[in-house]
Length: 98
Image (tube, rainbow, N blue to C red; front, side, top):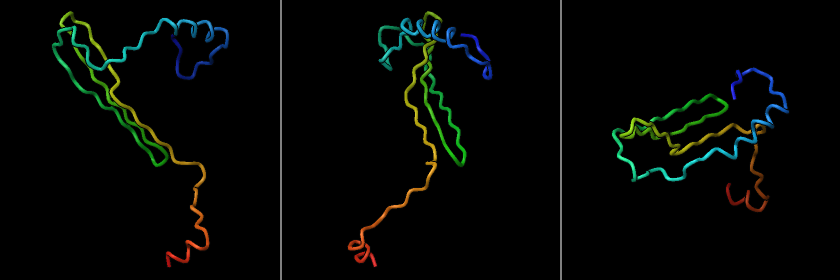
């Protein structure tokens, strides 16, 4: 799929390319001991604003046969709620906090 960030996606093209998702293989294991690893480096990305934050950590490994493996270790994100919620305290409990 080669689209620009602001390109409009046509539904029939997207559906056709989405069928190829069955071919995507995502390894579950973070560490694979059957290959000789030359170098391992962690990569952490994060960004934040007043409205949200996000962070992710990857493990990049260079294997002996010159291939590179990338594994997502963890990811986290939060957004500020649209409505501020207040906690309503029942009257009989409110008297106990005074």
